[in-house]
Image (tube, rainbow, N blue to C red; front, side):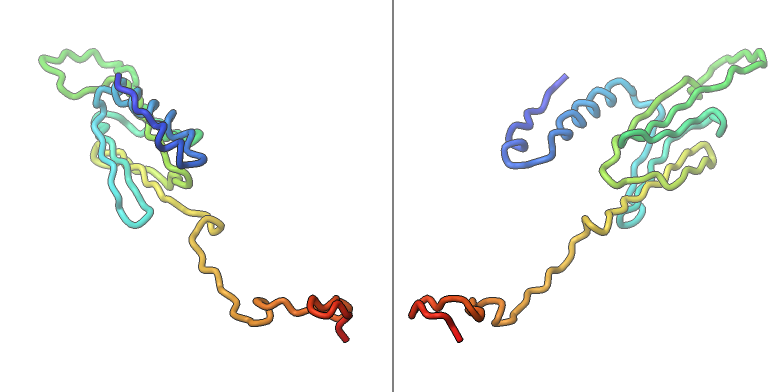
Length: 163
């Protein structure tokens, strides 16, 4: 497994220490998942995303979606088939799976839909008002720029009190 040296990032950035562990986790999970089930991640609108997984053969009750500490986890576990079925060929995978997706800060799951064998999970990135860019007014009041001695303050030139 390859490792990435993030030393240059840490030299000029503050608060990105979680980034290194996130990259390691993603690289580990990518190798472990072995591509099943296949999925898409798409941008549906500004600050809106959708993750779609191909879960053919799975019923709604056999799927579980969970978000914990910034990680979206989708699990599928096929119920035991009570019918004794004899397949000549079985190409539709129904094995248990677990897919994990790391979510950026402020990304929230807004719902999920199962239709035609595709599980779509809708996500929204909502930036709190305090973190949104805001314009700062610049005051051009001359009085704020110049120091004017107050009554009772000594004048710097004469050493006398101002009247």
